[in-house]
Image 1 (cartoon, rainbow, N blue to C red):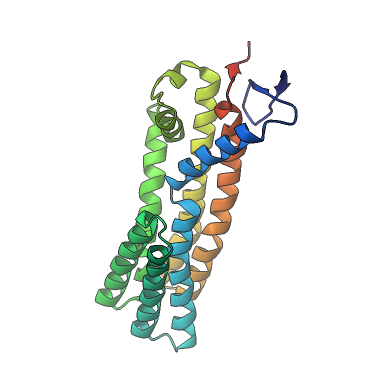
Image 2: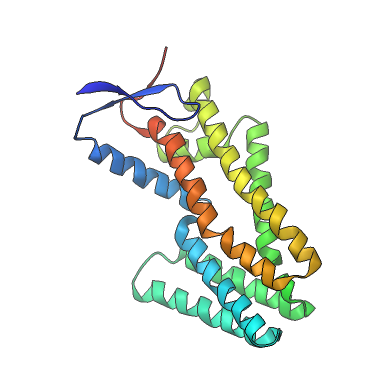
Length: 233
């Protein structure tokens, strides 16, 4: 075993890793970060909510902007995704949440007669997530730190380490940035009622942007999750 430096933005940590044999620790880090990112949606949650949106916008535009058939097509896709999770005996929490959200979105759009309202719930959800993350930073309890602490059975000790706290704050700001970008791009399109561009924006800023921020989170937090980490002096 030897001490090797582990670099990451804003991170002043070093981790004890074996030269070729760190794959076990790396897999543990990846597993913990997978749980962490699931807390803010998860790639399966993004997929379960994203595919019905793709079906909705394509059907809506291809069918002459008729609302009801597009909503039905989106609901069928959502039901198929949920059924697939059940058949494969996978965890259905994200799929169920996504399908309930899909039902609410379809109801609001149908009740108001405005296709753009199919995306209203998603906008409100993004605003809620972003606000919660900002508040957590302002009160010096960044939610990424709270989530990591909860996973590791240490809800508050990490706050005594200024370097670790700064890392968790930066990681939390990364997710604030994700939700902010979505709102900055999508809200004007929603207000203008541009359903096609709004649907395209939702797709483009869905899984691809999520994957980017999840990777940045991994790069930021991995050094703090490895065994044998201590703060540099």
